[in-house]
Amino acid sequence: MTVALPGLALALLCLLQVGAKVPVQPDFDADKFAGMWYVTAAASNCSIFLKMKDGMKSSITTISFTPEGDLAMKLVWPLLDQCQKFELLLQQSGQAGRYTADQEKRDVLVMETDYSHYAIVHEVHQSETEPSTALQLLTRAQDVSPQLLQKFTELIPTMGLTKDMLAILPKSDQCTKAIS
Ligand SMILES: *[C@@H]1O[C@H](CO)[C@@H](O)[C@H](O)[C@H]1NC(C)=O
Image (cartoon, rainbow, N blue to C red; front, top):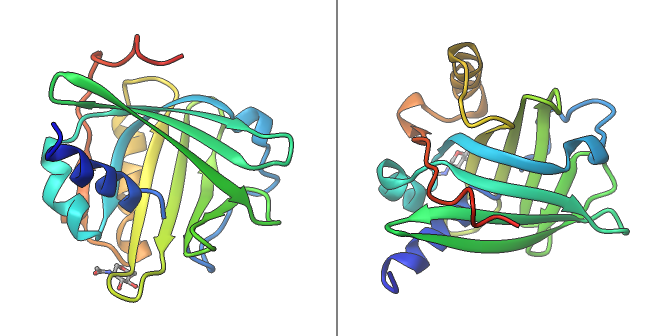
């Protein structure tokens, strides 16, 4: 556990990174975006993610917004026999649907969402040593339709990533009770 955790935490950070030229969901509505999502698939060229992706399971993220409009994210990630919890606060950027962290080195952008079924989140980490890009598929239900998965998979190469960087995260009931 104690050995795996820093790696996992870093792998999660790989998934929390956004670029400038990526489209944002028009008329993004934060209130409708809030609530619980399953992270059902992810793709990233971050080396730690690529090392760990085959052992990752679907996690749960609960999103809320502060009165200032910042995005608060609570993640519950099944790891071995435990549920690891992480909390992150992303600052609003002035553009609806786009959030930043680490002095704007990390951007998180909601590319597309219908609020009630799915969201596609794009992230970029501007690091001098290892810049990386990630895409995440969030779904309200734990089951994801083949059509949605296909749509997500088709987006991967358009973001400069390759399909072998994709992890379809297996469903897990391990942590559904750990959220609150
Ligand atoms: C990840 O992909 C982005 C976009 O193509 C690129 O700018 C970055 O250098 C890549 N990082 C790695 C570690 O390959």
